[in-house]
Image (cartoon, rainbow over all chains, first blue to last red; front, side, top):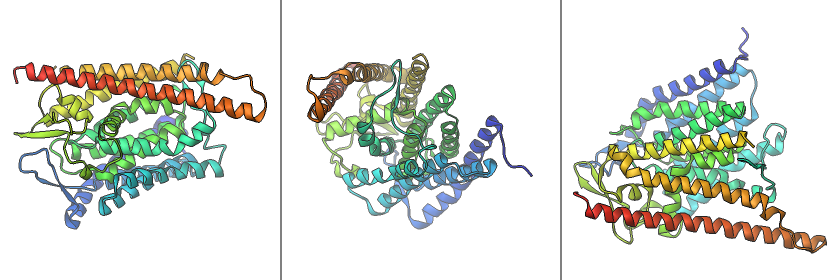
Length: 341
Length: 87
């Protein structure tokens, strides 16, 4: 039986449905495992602060892994770029698990995510014809003449999105919803620009995220924890670098980057959330949340959204979805300008 | 509708930051990278690269500063509206 599928759409559909189904179906097992091992956390924005299983990110990683294997199986080859993408995601997930179990300091966690960039560099060294990196493309202008600077910034291409996605994972469903819009933007851009390998990577990550989403929506039955958020962020960064979609990636991740920038600028450094004395938001009861108006409170995207007045948690999530939708539109506009050059 | 009311000015910040970022990258590529001091040799090349890096870095920091200042202003305005509002 010939397993080689030449039809791109059919292959894409297969990859997407495999990662979606494996992530969706494995999640109850992950929840059971987390509960048994005591990997549970308090949902601090709910009355009574119910305990919710964490480590849901393991299901996302499982979805990405199974989807990658199916892709290799139907293509009858090991695609180097896909291998690099999967490795980046798995390494970031492992760092997330390490952080979850050992509670690393903010600086250590951020710096350790730089390691997740190693597969890209190794892939480029071993197979430079397949892993083509450097000279990011810009709207109107074309490819930038960045050479040394690009290599100096490359380690942050994974660390920044990984930590930015990790930092935004504060309310039920926010991480998978905002990340889904980011991946959709990269997916659309990769199709418009004909970067088909990036398209498959997007479909893999999208399937895994959508498989996780129903369990994480308000009221959450499972949290992704650092395992999931760091892995998803690293995956998005890897797609942007491997697909030559760096600028589109930055725009697609705008809500996450905005949130990270505000935190860094207001707390003046890389601090772990337990190291920050004041919370950016306060729970008023009845699931209503308000911005913390105190001078010492870190300015986050949630704090900025709520600076207009208190909202219920589902409405905060909707606000994040609106912002992500607009960043999706801006990313598409960026892609269109890239075509117009 | 309520959610849109809460997000529209943040979308405005997003569009501003996006536009300025594209402008900044274009200025760096079209103007800064082509800046050359009339110094020949290896030293000249080093000086030119350092100059380009310094100007690009300064522009990047200015972009971040504008972004932060606009956000702080916007947050203050929103907090005022909140305290004046019916809630």
